[in-house]
Length: 151
Image 1 (cartoon, rainbow, N blue to C red):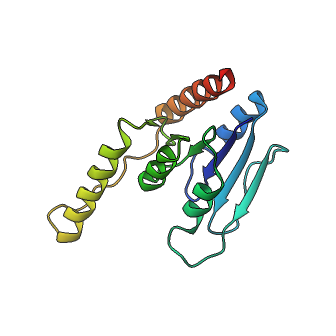
Image 2: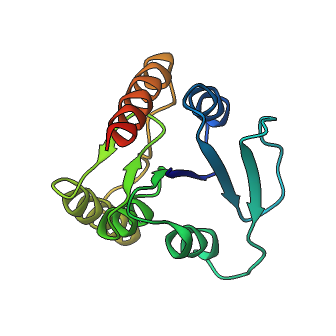
């Protein structure tokens, strides 16, 4: 059976992940840089990666996942690494990262970061999380788990 890993720092859909995982009897590992409360479930655990290294939690996820696993993250570089390792990746708004789109998303992210650093672009950032994002996330997560269960 596959594992679901959640990049838990700033993840707005922790409860939804547990809800769907319990329905499909999947195990969930929340990975964070600091201790936090996670939804109670016998199918979930929290791993706190105590390191001053910037991407320590991301590195932990990548080092522990397998090809069949699913990662929930809004971090595009982490999604890229997971997809390259053969795992599935989904963001908290329900957008699926694939081999076809994750490279372009990473390039766009890096370009916008460079433009912000030079002052050519100011402000921005992700849109506020909304009800339809939660609904799309639940639908995508359900479909991804169903597809993985069939394999």
